[in-house]
Length: 258
Figure (cartoon, rainbow, N blue to C red):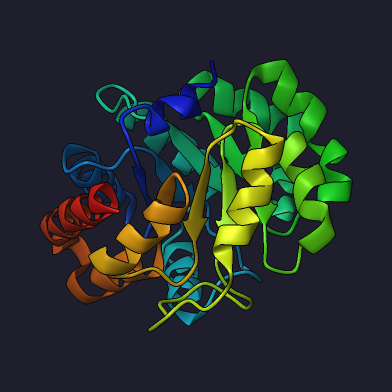
């Protein structure tokens, strides 16, 4: 069984997203530990990139703050090594194809395996081009996580059939960011996914309240939240861990009520 599947074993999963190095790596470690201690089932760690095309202004800002603070991929690998001494829940990287290519695909993915990263999300990697990364992911046992968007339409079944780890369902068109309401017909997307795979699916983009998280978890197997957490980091900086922990606890309760 994929290590990521463990995140979905005990009911609905809550998945926070955290940009590594915003405002610094010490704070990232404290925030990840607070999230894990307060009910996060799987954590997405963002490796900052200068042109994060899927991100809205909040997460773009986090990327810029991290990069201007000198955060680089090797430092993030060291951070995960250190966190893995006591954090046991699954962790995945979310980053862009260029970050992996420029580091060296095999070197990047083999290091993921070595430090205990369970999966990789690459939002700018088209499904048709995933063979650029898939052989190395399979060689080192790192799940390449597929995204399904409202525009995927007749490709949903095909993507689902080949999915591994979990499926990231994008709730709405556009970039990441909190939204007052999500109007996509997610139920029909999840139905097609479930007809084609047993791999769990979680919904992200636009979720910020426990009520929204509960609604998404009622449709799918979990909810993913990024921008609302990054806003707490932007507001509280190095003191954010306690606030993120409280937020994660409320969101996990919302997900379990879904």
